Length: 153
Image 1 (tube, one colour):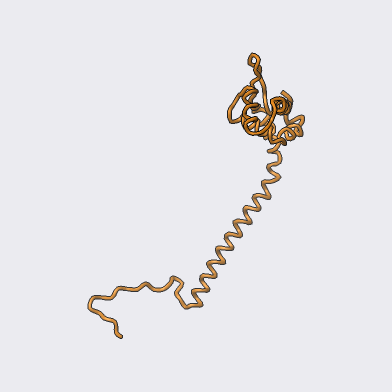
Image 2: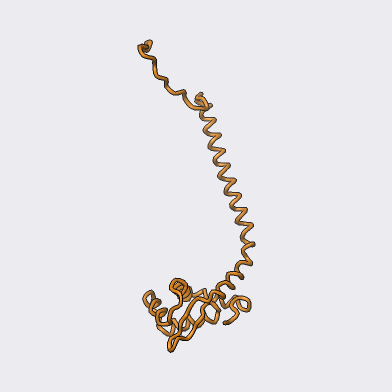
């Protein structure tokens, strides 16, 4: 297996830059090990790709360390190379901290904005009640009249 990320991160991301190659990885991830013919048939059902084109995509993914192949008689069986995927993930994880702090700050600002909006709504509702002369608790509920008492009027 080629050293996928340690020696050549560009090769991994160049391989992933093609939508057909990403689809190959998705097919292999979902279906596990598959013969080349099954991968070709699945891709041909979705797009006009020749068998040699699919084989070329598989070769690029294999050289990038994202796919492994094993012979099975006259067939070649392909599968996602989890070591290559893990190495690519590890390389990307080095950048996670770069994004974490700004995203944390954004979350804080969004929460602060929501709290300010709620406080402004409560203040507006309180001043509206004060302007209309209604009690902060709202209007007093109507009480039932005792039996036999009539309205004076």
